[in-house]
Image 1 (cartoon, rainbow, N blue to C red):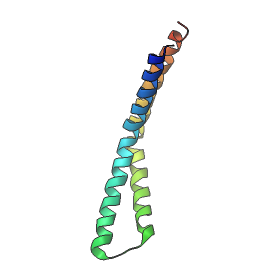
Image 2 (image 1 turned 90 degrees about the vertical axis):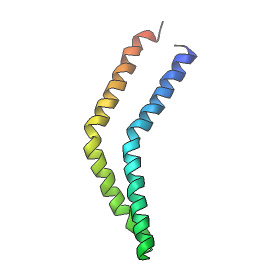
Image 3 (image 1 turned 45 degrees about the vertical axis):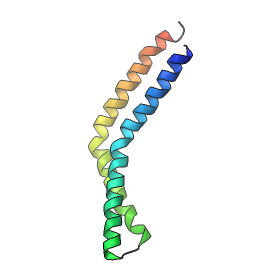
Image 4 (image 1 turned 45 degrees about the horizontal axis):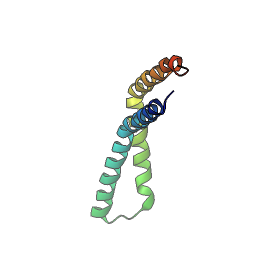
Length: 89
């Protein structure tokens, strides 16, 4: 396997991680922004107020996107396994 192929596999893996984590991180960021705006307008400065809604939102996104994430990971894993035959050549 050449250096260019290794770099391509690693860059594809990093892109996969970014695509898979984007919905989870996006919802977490949106919920955090909404809660911080709520805290600012109501002058509630409780530090632990952000954790429970973020955790609930993240679990909901994981449940909603689980099949898409698994299908995306499955297709990438299948493409990696198909490349195994070309490694020694």
